[in-house]
Image (cartoon, rainbow, N blue to C red; front, side):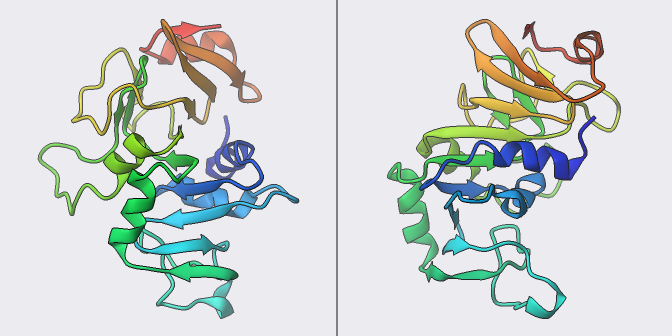
Length: 208
């Protein structure tokens, strides 16, 4: 199966020249390290930064430069800064081409649950609800199953929803799946992962 870096590298292939892209917390933040050569992408963060560079090396760390997940990042010559309200205006106004987000659950019809687990401390919903409602394409990166070995690709989400029918593509450690009419279409499987492997562990309806 793919590891976290391989999943991020697969997701980076979604990027097209000239795109404005928002990267969610977790595995999605790694995508910035795998932007294909020759592709010019502008990364946007809901905390007010446009034009983020890759993660810093030890001697590049600047504690004032962070992404929405509070991880240190680098800036580019074209980087610009603004308040959070302006950042959300970009998102809500439909100016961001794609969001690459983490998730706890995705349903077979593209419902997304990624902002809270009932009973656990939640600092806030962040920008996920605005992102899934405002961007043109939503790609999710997550492990195929949870720590108990249960599928995270479900017929119906059990956790509070971030958005209904908002996910376009899901990339897990087992493969790539597109949300289509009637279920999840298998686009590609990770090396060494068979169709039977995936069907056994997946609750959502798969279309091969």
